[in-house]
Length: 112
Length: 114
Image (cartoon, rainbow over all chains, first blue to last red; front, side, top):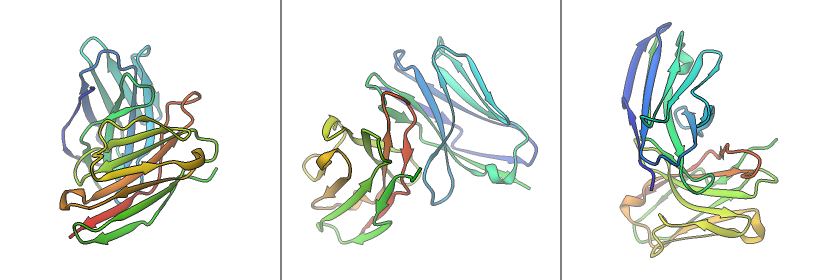
């Protein structure tokens, strides 16, 4: 099956700085890559996603890039704010439609 | 639209006891998932339903875990008997599958096994 690795496990940045979280995957057939944000004690929520036929996608302060050849994708958050503090999970959709394999998560701390 | 509902939100049991969790997906969502999220890890899929049929249960410990989705709507996940290592948050999610990849998560049930 698919194997998704995510790093770093923790990331601390100053408010206003950028944050980058990276994930790699093993199954070259994977073609959908969502990112979820999970605040403490709350449910994971989709913040951005990308399909394999696209190299980059942006939504205001967040962006995701995908390198299919290298099998890695990254989340970029610019102008970070304290409310961005949360755990972020990447995922890759495996061979079975809608079966997600999640990374281990990155705890982002934005210091005011 | 209303979100995915789960109950209970918290449960504390002794090892070897039984426990059941309930999930009500978003109306119209044919696909339902149960995930186990151990502290500090990402969600791990336990079972996936399409309507009331099982699509994938390859990571469900079938000697102690069972799940059903009667009538293709609500679902229950049961653990019998529980072990200490079952302590985790159990997340239910649903999706429209053929219209969208997005999975919508419920608030989860935090299980502590003592």
